[in-house]
Image (cartoon, rainbow, N blue to C red):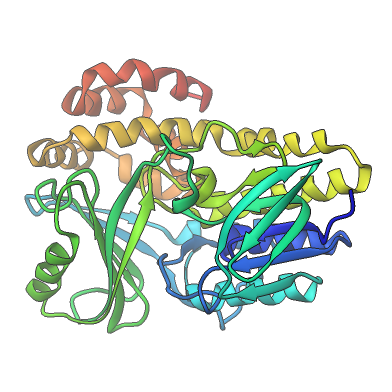
Length: 390
């Protein structure tokens, strides 16, 4: 059946634009529909990534998109204890997310993709080996549709998100090269407050949690620090892990729409970005060969890369949901009396941090922390630990 495009991408953020770039570079006709009026806005992600992430998705770390470079992470317990991790080996960057997304749009457009902003996709219908995609202005057909529409496009029954508040703040209590994480189950149940510096006097500050007013919590946090919020944004953080199937008929899901954000931190530039790259490459292979089944390889390739990590992250998410402030303080004390932090600084992998964290902990420390947190979860962690090489 003749179609208007080889592929239609619904959503013009990281995953969708990378999929569009890959398909267009292979010589196929690609259309991108973005709901918002401008690529990159509103900015719903703070853009903390590793240099390895940018290399994996084929983006150069230019000064136009990199706002800052991080060397340390300091974690704060509810009782005022701290734990510091040296992050220099991980080469962590802070991206200007708006400019980053526009750079990806430039790359996709340069490869031949047609991008149209301000076009909300109302529905899609599969028919005769193609997909009909309807916006408020028109209806277009394609041989494949990429669902990159974010958390709102998660399947029913698989939507697990946290509401977050995110501020841009002027202040003087943080160091430019240091990310800070504050744990407090009363203020951010099941999550935390974060500070990501942009400059010596400006930072991205956010909080998420279950059943609390995030804007009120963050207002109080910033006021207590003597900071001034100059921008406030609401966002949804996807924490439910990957959905059951990434490919359904002629529709391929990527990024947040596929649950490819880390269940612990909600970070998805690397895992979701690689999802977009893989989806685009396998769709291009399918189009070249005329074999629709080739696209199934995308899901297997992604799960081979991230399945073990996400399995562990989901278990850690369950632990976070059970913690109280006393247990968090006890964990900090256990960490302080060991060599864990030094090992993490040397062995940690920013993009696969949970597996690297387990390796650094070792069995003895895992047993100790598990006894503090939730001993019944140790059995679920043990097979993942073995697969990680310990």
